[in-house]
Image 1: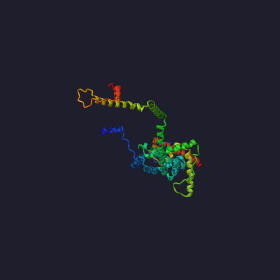
Image 2: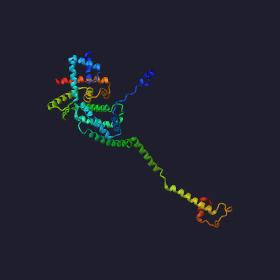
Image 3: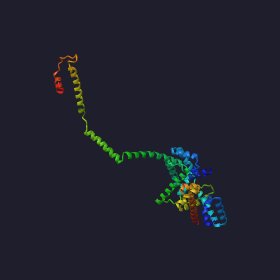
Image 4: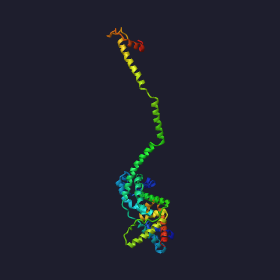
Length: 171
Length: 204
């Protein structure tokens, strides 16, 4: 095995990542090459130095994480509410269309304002007319000869009623 | 029969081997996905040292490492719903730690602050308790090592931190860094040789 290939395997040898055959080849080479042996020692020392960089964790990591999680969950509700407001109430299209709808409704109320008196008068008129017609029919009888009537035939229609009947029903 | 077994469907579509994942850890992650803070606390306590040291190795500052560690776990809490158990939870977590640390590093570099300076504002704690002289010597060596790490390429520094400080296997390195095991081997070799070269220069 040539020197360059062995050099490239020193790192994997250090990590015990070589198979048995490769491992033996590297060990054989290192025993015969002072320079490569020094390089390997160097790598080993640096590796040990780096492992000593490891530091113990400071206290309070979880407490910090917990407070941030709780804070952000509160913020997220606020943010969601703000998004809701922005999306549904402050966006121009829904705002303009809502305003147009409200304006049309208000305008229609104003223009097509229904006069309550005009609604009530014809109804009252119909009811009065219907009740009076019924009363007159019952009093006068449509066909008095065919029906035995207990109604007083000498009944005298008052002048006011006669005028009313003449005017509206042609009696 | 023999021929049938040779050409069985698994010959062409081999079964996906299941990863040896700790069942308790899976339950912890699932509880976290259901927004269980107690489970999250367990995860933080289990992995805080690893995450802290990845951040420290990449950033070279204890204070920043603490902030990034918190950022990593907050990010895990936010993104844990996206974890689909296709990899080990630890490699997923280390990937977040690595990415956030590198982002912070590049952000500081862009802002051209004194990011490359070694943080000596806080007491460095030697891992092995030795004599005071040894501590001083070790501290000086650590300073030199930090300076050397700062001079390395980002990819070299990251792989060295993950391998030497966190002792990740080649397989885990490949998962965290998103490259093949062959690439891990060669990158690790290059990083170590580069570090050796820089340290040799620093010690002269």
